[in-house]
Length: 206
Image 1 (spheres, rainbow, N blue to C red):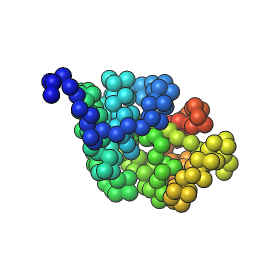
Image 2 (cartoon, rainbow, N blue to C red):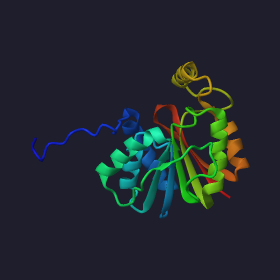
Image 3 (cartoon, one colour):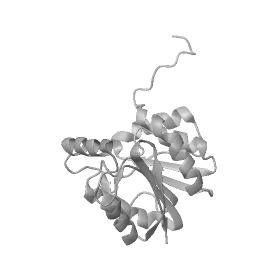
């Protein structure tokens, strides 16, 4: 075999959605994560966002995290990218306290709240309130309902698909999540409309 031949990394997984939504999210995050600091990414999944955003935000230390079964893919993407500000991924179950990172300047998560059961969403937001520094920002990407109503027919179909797969999952009501955030000491700063009927919600720690 030639030394220049590259075999695919078995652990490295790929998500088309991560490629499609990363540029619009980056544009929003430039306004939210403006100063140097450490970002804790919750639910890093394949690791694609971690690599993309670590490269786009060289002034940030990007800390990926996820459940054990997702860490090999994140490590594979990280090894290939070889970025100095992309940290070794940490095992993190949002339902288990304390979290492995004591504090962070920013927290980011994408497409996680509608996958988790509601009890995990509650634990996640409470945990964010504990690790986020005063004045720090939490940015959350994904679909949300408003006034307990879907914002589009596609979100209604997506919600039905989610619940068919796992009754504990589903598109979350903004008001319910914002209520959890307030209890955790977070105040909503911005609500950004995104492509494909998604949002980026940004809260600040008081």
